[in-house]
Structures are given as C-alpha cells and as structure tokens.
Image 1 (tube, rainbow, N blue to C red):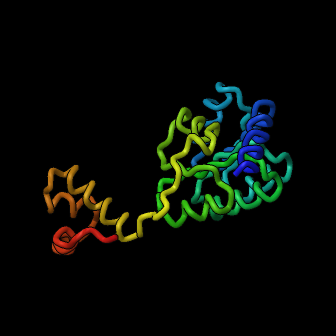
Image 2: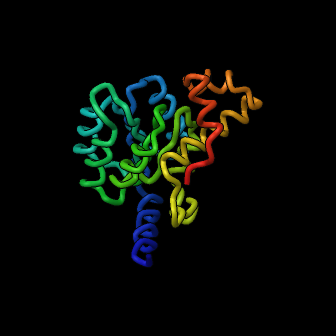
Length: 190
C-alpha cells in the first residue's frame, strides 16, 4: 500500500510538469472539441482517430495522460491502453465509451486504465478523472455484487424511474413484458 502511494505521488509530480495528452476517438468533432477544452485547461493535446494512429502517437511521444474511446473503427481502445502502459507505466489513462459493460471496465482497469467514463462525458468530468487519486475513488467492496445482482438492481432503478410501469420499463430495457414480470416477481439475487 505504501508503495502504491509513493508511485501515485511520483505520477502526480510528473503530471505537474508534463501535461501531454493523447485523445484517441474516431468521432473527430468530439475529439477536436475535447482537445480544445483540455488545451484551455493547460494540456498539450494530440488527437488520433483510431488504434493505428494512437499507437503511432505513443511510439512518437508517449503522453503523460490519455483519453481513449473503447470502440474504434479499426479495433479496441484496450490495445492502445496496453501499449501506452507498456511504454510509459506512469501514464494516467481513462477509457470513454458509449457501450458501458462491467466486464470491459474490469479489463480496462486491469490493463492500467485509471478510470472508465460513459459517454457523453464533458471536459470537467474527464479532467476530474485524469487528476483523481486512488483516495478520491470509492474503495471496492470486500464482496462485490454478482453480475445477476447488478442486472437486477439496474432493472429495479429503471422500473422505479418509470413509476413502476411494467410496460414502459420493458420498452426501455428492450425486454419482453412477461420476462420482466417474472424477474420482478423473484427475490433479489445475492
């Protein structure tokens, strides 16, 4: 634990001087807007439109920070994270995606991503994620929820947001109404 704090302190000290930022996203207008916004916050931003361009940018000059889209036209942003962490282990990278999936988030963090944000994320959220410390992040539970429990809780949140209307909830979840009724009738999984 002490080693982790020392590593974070060293990374934050390097971050104070090196504000290089790589943005890898195939949505070029979004990448350009984000680059301008981050440059306004003191970063030297470079954009890449895919895995190939991202890997080339890392080979040219490994950045201190990276914002990487998960699904790119020519592959997965996880490949970019993997290469960045291999070349520059102290780099702080976050994954952005419109396709939130718990398994992918776990994989991204295991590969070295510091955080995982769902699109649309604005520049302030991205800046907060890039500059956060492990202490800022909630501690993981000793007994994390099972995938079934996470699914059940998501269904319950949508059900409540639809004022307990089964038909509307089923529509929003893209689920058959009878299937939803069976799930709602059961007890919560552990």
